[in-house]
Length: 150
Image (cartoon, rainbow, N blue to C red; front, side, top):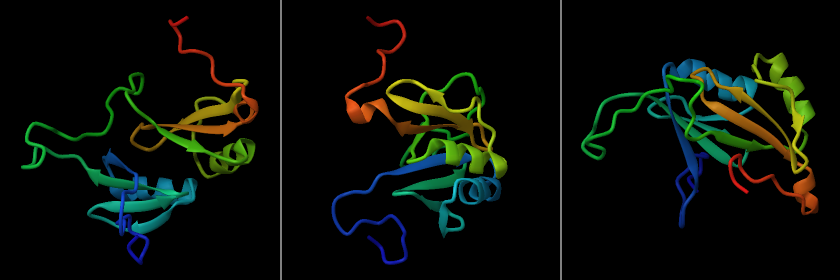
């Protein structure tokens, strides 16, 4: 990996997550000040090391030569989500308490789902973030099947 923490592997690959954001400074503050990430690159693109991964953020925009039919923009409908960030934590109650005190707005407090304790929050652009702590999973108790399946 690059010596200053930028996600550039010497071999193989590293997984990063890209977010199209309306205001880079606002999002950078959320992922560092609230969630405890570390700024690797301020802008172009903003890169935050969060736990053992990276969040990359840039403003939206129209097509480019390498994505000729794609426009990037932040979410517009908070009720419809096709993907979300999943953060696994060791102590969900502490995260919920500390992040709430720093301004995070959770949809609910942590809920015991048998396999895990879980809750969700949104970032400043409305991206959904799941926060989970494995409990039953550690003992062979896994999630219920998705709704609508048997």
